Image (cartoon, rainbow, N blue to C red; front, side, top):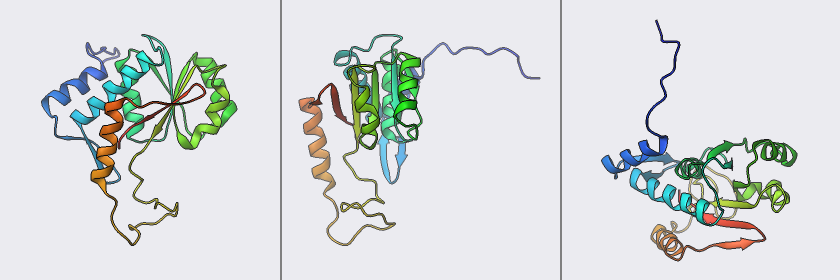
Length: 193
């Protein structure tokens, strides 16, 4: 039968990403609503965010980082970034409300949270007391089923297609300048999906 003992792997999950990025840099690592991220792109995003967590947020080995995100490329990037920073990821269901989040933050001892813009109202009251840093994970490209006017649909609205080249150029410009916008103690970092 099956062994009653669990063998712990000798490598980390981040190491597995590193190996995949080296072996298959141009293969798709994440496919999300028609948008793809290759292993090389994913590793770059993860390394960038891990550096931000360590250098700007003071995350050290063993620190807890709350991931208050939907299932998305931003969650994957934040999860692997926490692993890369030798931190402990604390995934939190985005349906939890402020007091539930407050309890999880206090119970885990987390001082940093990565969250979606839509969840800001639940995180902002915790900044300064329970949390020292909040990182807003934003999308540059819109979800294909949410149109610029905010309406939902299954097809692209009439009119010109979005200029993806301009979006990519803006992203590269932001990355190159390591642009950071502070709102109180809240940082905004844009993750491409």
